[in-house]
Length: 170
Image (cartoon, rainbow, N blue to C red):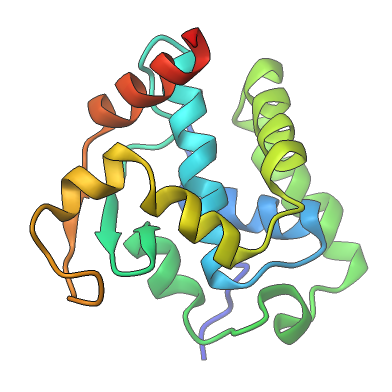
């Protein structure tokens, strides 16, 4: 089994999605896959809105049956059902995970991530799944697929930005 907390790659002002996932897991004290993927989705969505369309990471979400998914995060962490408890992050590694994420981001980006976690982090994965299923970016990417039909259509960043910008304006 691979180490789910090995170092990722960074680009200035952006973060590797796997490193962002680690940051989210540590900040929340744990999360299952369903919740983690939806939180990453909302972080990217609000980042697109508040940072003039600039993505926090380049990878696109896929419209899977249970909501938006980053395939890189799924592949890296799929063997861990309860991500932080099963992996057993040792307390001495937590500061390094946080520092690595915060090092490649601007202060305002970190604040946005933390704000999204404050807003959505107390909700269950199922609640967040239902929320994403009621919103246009996921629904439109799914198209005519049946609710339980497998699919992996790309959710466009422009659709995410447009939808959440309209919510912010409302």
